[in-house]
Amino acid sequence: MSPLTYTLLAQVGAGRIQGGWEYIWSAYGIAWASLSLYALSLWMRRPKADAVSKE
Image 1 (tube, rainbow, N blue to C red):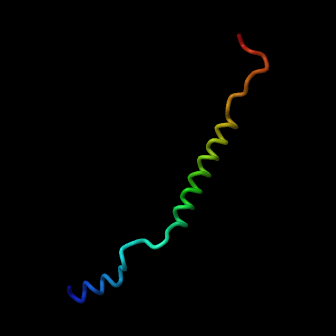
Image 2 (cartoon, rainbow, N blue to C red):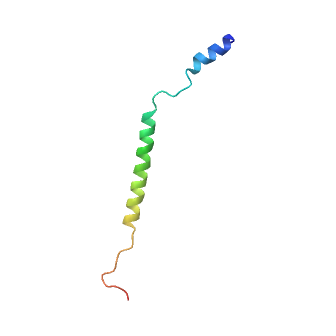
């Protein structure tokens, strides 16, 4: 290999992401929070049942 190739490989590293679990857990947290808020908004906007049935 040429010296340029060795230099580029040294700058890039192993080519793997080290760690990254913080990103994954924060993405899961944002997704669950969004789904929870959406479910709460649907529950709050649900039609109310009348006291007397309309028949």
